[in-house]
Length: 178
Image 1 (cartoon, rainbow, N blue to C red):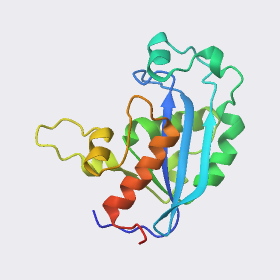
Image 2: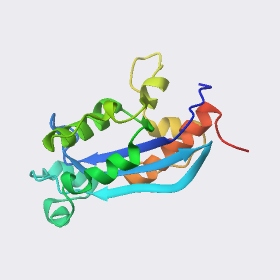
Image 3: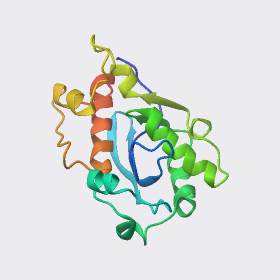
């Protein structure tokens, strides 16, 4: 991959109340900005009240419960800030079917447009790198380790994973500034 993208790139990760639910609701959203081949200090991070019960399996997976998120924002409270942050950017994700769909569900509930209409483009690095001969999906941790990007799948938060995605994209695209 030797693609250089001009302008703002936003690497994002999110967490859902139940990743296995077909209507997974956002509980955390994190993003970092890449500009001119460098990760900038510009960040977006929020915890969200999903306004739906979080199953025990979800709490075991991500550590959040309805009680721990009761005082968090709802999407309508942060949507404007998120839209300003990402407007016109190139969105970089791992597993867009999950992450972008979670965002789109939140947007629809508020009567707001889908993500693909707000950003210049979306790149799913999982799809870019999903060339395993056995047909199994490539795991982010495997790719990060192969490119010597630190990761701890048991402890990385969405904010840390967004930063890792940005570093992975810079490595793969050759866009990093010396």
